[in-house]
Length: 233
Image (cartoon, rainbow, N blue to C red; front, top):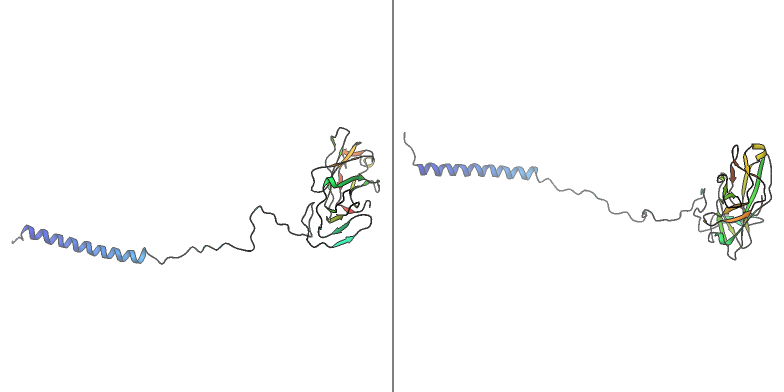
């Protein structure tokens, strides 16, 4: 047997090794081009919307004919309807809201019926400026020390309207409760009725001359209605 010189065998081995590595490298590059570099695609992120968005927390009044509470936003184009004996109702407010300092409170004559006591709670514009009321008053019976008697009155269902009060004009809300002699409710005789205009924090105090009122037990709830132009039903 004839052997090739050691140096010749070593050179042939190196040549063969480089050839195999070259083939593997070529195959690897081909695989990378096909599978590791697919066509690039975008994520499809939308552009910010314009014209119909609003930053959370920012207030933009929206007119609504179905407002159910005090202080609801009104249309900027009022349509007023005259009402005898008081202000006017409208679908919009042309003037600013009536503040407590602009108003005088009073309680009208009781108009009982069917076991119910019915008192008009009246707010009159005592200022020189026209202003508006919308919704329900707040009210509470208090004793001579200012302590509240009984729970807060409840709201009757109704459709509040914006009432425009020129100087000297009035609006009223009904305060009703079952006659304690009929209902058997526990009673107390208040010294005053505290009245808070819609959306105001300051109150007005009116001397109460309507006798005993229910403060607990059967049929002890007191109810308030929405404001209506005028001074009495």
